[in-house]
Image (tube, rainbow, N blue to C red; front, side, top):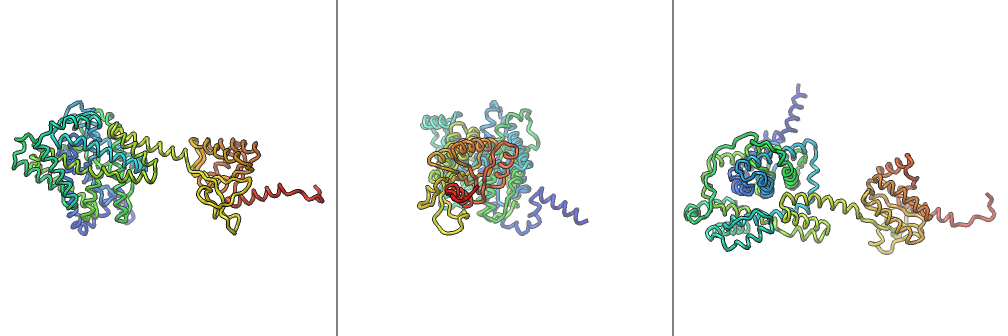
Length: 580
């Protein structure tokens, strides 16, 4: 009878990772509760601010955060990750929904919730299909460029609320021009509140980085609004905020297909950012996260956010860092945070009604300012020009085409970089270091452009190709070999095949043609250090008559020794006294 119980237990643990740590909640409660309070102080003002970015009332940010924390807390495999509203996903949500809502507030809310559900469904399906590797299509240089472009877009979008000047609806560069043109129309009271809050947040970050700067700014903003009667000075405030629980259920919308394209881009970015943060903190604490389970958990969290009429969400690196710094050890902190958010919705929303909108704008700007660091771009420029170009292309794509267009540009640029690197792989002509020892050893074969005093062999050239041979680079391989073979009197080209991982049919056909061309020139194509899969591909091509029979050796040294021996034997005159 125990075996079935174990099986059920294993199924529960595999389905709900929280089952692994919930029995130990008494050991976790103290530190996780303190961490939850620290995160709550940041989460509440950020959730309301990011709701404004998403184009929905502030309370919907609390709804989305509650659902995300609750669902991810049960299903997530990271002990530290904080899932809820984030600046990037919020602005992507607005970019998707605004053109479809046709100016209807109710339709806008329904579309935002539908977008969260579709995003969650995509993530969930990818997790069940074990497609966790898809996030790798957004390389780190791409994310670096994307985040800088996103930060610039968000800041330009929040400056009007910070200063109370007209907000444009055009692209980034048009909005920058509109800001410059309308700067003289700013409201002095609003600008004083907004800029003062921004300075306060930056000072607190510098002198007291662990202080809940966003919560302090909110308290001061509400106090200033009430003491100075800011609405009388035309300072916009949040106004009445609902203190009721959200409606639970599917949004009343029939055209879910209209949000699929935007949901796919949001799902890709949300997962890429979330898994990167989850892996970073898992490495720090010595455990592993399951990429496919993370897809399922993040997908379920988004579905939950949509069902409570929220908007798409993902992991927040800043809030995760706050929780980790406060000692968070498990997702018990996330569940406590969900409870705190629920209490905030029911009991504290009236407190925020006098909060100036300029204060929320300052909180958003302060949150994304660290993303503007150009240190990563400078590092990429020093390390890899292609990666640097990727980052700049993605940054430019976000500014020119918006956040959703920027994601498309990022994916295309990543794939283009992959093809480019495969098309132009590293190649080398090898020589051997002068030393005594077994001539069949591969020790000592080096790139002749990187090392001096290497031994080369008359009539032989040793060529290394560090990439698979496929349709995009087959002609390059052929041209390089022919150029080397015809540059001097070469009788054999030894291909160091240790870096060749695969040969497609285009490559196999090219090798057959190359073999014939070299043979007509009196030279031979020889392989050394061939991988098993590559050997199998050539053997299969030989078996069906599609390729010649190539000579191949286990080591470069063995190939060189045999070719030199046969050359020496051919060059040695026959003994006059011998007979046939």
